[in-house]
Structure formats: C-alpha cells, structure tokens
Image (cartoon, rainbow, N blue to C red; front, side):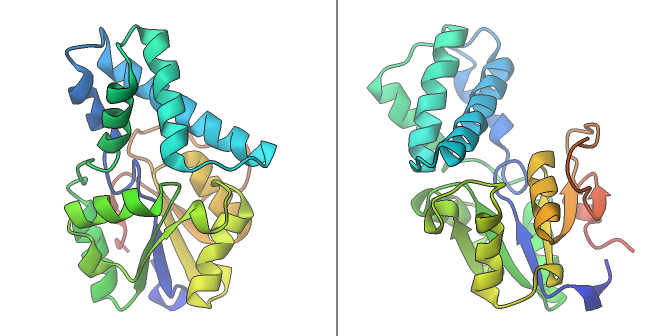
Length: 222
C-alpha cells in the first residue's frame, strides 16, 4: 500500500477481525451440522439487516441477531427459547480474534495511520469485543451503525467515517472480509481492501475493491 494515499485504516469486525465461524463450537452438541447452522444464521442476520434498511425500519443488531437465530434454529432443529436466545446474542460479543487481527492493527498504528472499527454491531457489543480481544489500545475509534440507524452497505454508514475523521473518502482504506461490504465501501469512494479469507470468487456487481489479500498479514505487503 502506498502510505501517501491513505490517512485512516478502517476495519470491519465480524469475519474480518473476529471469527464468527467459531460459533459452530458452541452448537456442536445441539446442531447436527453446526457449521451449516451458523452459516444459515449469519446469512439470515445479514438478510434481516439489509431488509431493515430497505424498509426504513431500524432495530439494533442484537435484535436482528436474535431474530436470525430463531429462524436458523427452527430451520435446523436447534432447541431455542428465551434463555438460548440471550446466550446466542451474547456469543457475538465473545468471538475470538483472528491471529492476524491484532498484528494488523498494531502495524497500521506503527505506520502512523489512524485506525477504526466500523461495524453493524451495537455499541455495547463492539465495546465488549474490542476489550476482550485487546484491540482498544490500537484503535482511535469504534463506530457502530447505531449512529446513522442504517446498516452497511448504505452510504450513510461509510459517510460516518468521513464525518468522524474529517477526511475525504479517497483518504480512507477500508478493510473487510465481506465481499458485499468491500463493494459497498468501494462504491462510496473508499480505497477498499477485500480480505478474502474464504478464497471466494470476486463479487460480480458493484465497484471492485482496490486491493485483494488472503489474510490481514498481507495488508502492508508492497
């Protein structure tokens, strides 16, 4: 990356810095195929977030996550009641960091960049995760979509970074493992890096990311 083109590095959280696929371990005893269950939960979670924004009916991400959990649990025959729902939502605040996450944040700060997290998560969930993963000393800001009451990839979400740091979009490098998120940020005007952890095909709709890497360890490779 050319340091002269960027002032701020902004990271997505879920799937980029922390591993939501690890939730499968929590459901190994109650789901016949816990990985498929978690994938369905995540897909429905994102689907409800997109739908809420299109409907102009904002509810916070914990509420979205709970609704998605109930759907995925019913689909996969996973026992679910109020207690299970609360535990499931709380689990998203307890996700482990990827091994390359903290080194990437540290590397960005050591190079003189401002750093931030921009996530669909609630402020409370983000604070808990950032603290548990020891990210806080390496971040200048932790921003939730709660402030704009829309979900990514709505442009207002990405605009919140510009407003917070007072920089032009082209001075922001946005890093996400979610292809749709990288596309949305690219459409907005960020210099986007897609961390393609899953070795997935490139998105075929919307603006392509500026750069694609396989792990955050490659973020500052020349």
